[in-house]
Length: 148
Image (cartoon, rainbow, N blue to C red; front, side):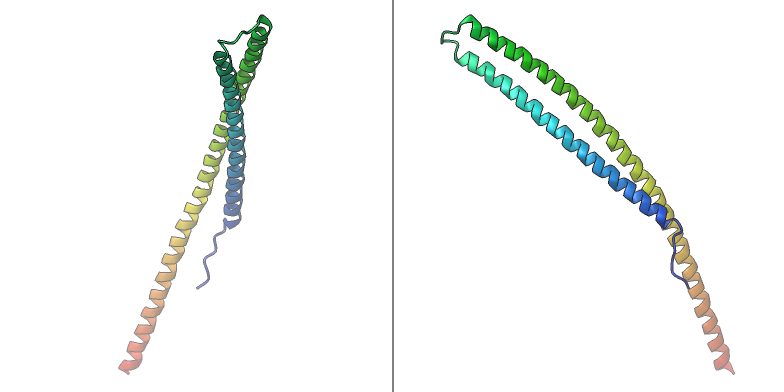
């Protein structure tokens, strides 16, 4: 009997490739999110370090100019942190969108794989039936040959 041939193998390969590309895109988006989170953490740590330095130097004499510079710097830092939080949220949305694309691609691939499994099982059943019929015929022929 002839070998199993799945007519939609090319489509299955395309779906697998599409899933792989979607996974790579998701990986890039996650890496981008991680970079934004790390930068935001760096900004927050910097702000905390400046606040700690000001608290530590409370006993030292601080003039009004230094205090004004400190406040301005902290305001700029807060704005930068706010902008970075926006970027983090945007990156999270991108990651979620990419995750949905991967999920969709996986489902599309699995549908074709399931179809392939069903067709293979059907083919296997037909092969087994044909083999059984062949051996039954061989047995019948041998029986009649021996009976003569």
